Amino acid sequence: MSLKPPEFQICELFAANAEVVIDKKTIVQALGHDWSSYDLRRLDKLISRLRQRWETQQSRRPSLMGRSVPQPGKVERIISTN
Image 1 (cartoon, rainbow, N blue to C red):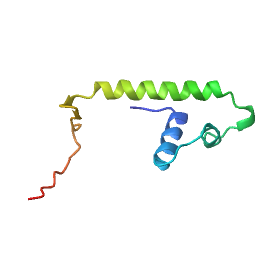
Image 2: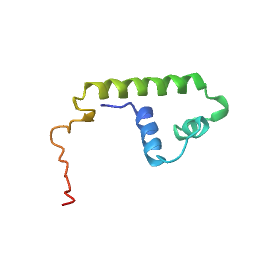
Image 3: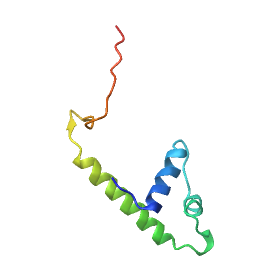
Image 4: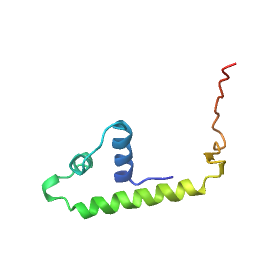
């Protein structure tokens, strides 16, 4: 999935803070904008488009019994506990 620069910045922010709830002010500032003059509807729309693209991408991936099938070129190791 190709991302536009603001979408990529948001994904980077979320990945770097996976265990933390990130408020809108932090997201706006991470995008390089001034919180006090930023139109939050713009942020809502950006997040909405990113979520839609993610869901569309995920729905295109084949699944097997509720699990995603590994994409070609990606190797998964199964570790035996025997």
